[in-house]
Length: 223
Ligand SMILES: [Mg+2]
Image (cartoon, rainbow, N blue to C red; front, side, top):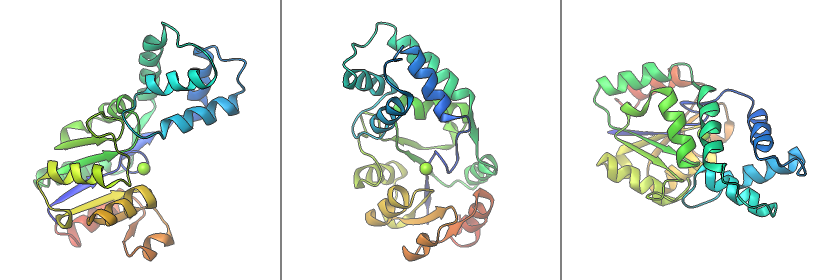
């Protein structure tokens, strides 16, 4: 192994606040009182999971469109405020910082491979202070990426950026379908971050957190 790809949300860190409260704030700011909270949350979650170039603003425009509402002129400002509120509640997973620092010292090229709107994921990465560790940051909503894990394209872009062939790259993530199956299908090796017997069925090791992951990277993969 020469290089590692990491998932962001649920692996290196993520939103530690109440995501439903975050959605409730968005609904209030958009004054969508006629749309009940469950329907609004469902629409936002669907739009957050869409393929192609994506920003939080685009997500909310599409939600408004589906509710037959016209986008308000305040939308860009509202999105900036929402991203700020989101960033305040983003936390690193225990051991993330120490592991990334060690890999940096060891000279291991790293890529971040994340699904989501480009502005939200970039904001989260900046809030964590992890940007500097990555040679490449591949976010599905970035117009230059426009592909969600498990699509081959996003793993292909990561390998190119890491200047490594797929067999030389290890993917670590907490989603069996997107991270693990996607990586394996493209020829990478993978480690599942989580306690799931399914990982064994896919023939990949599972670790309960980033400290055991760091140990595995050192001992099993020589990284
Ligand atoms: Mg994840």
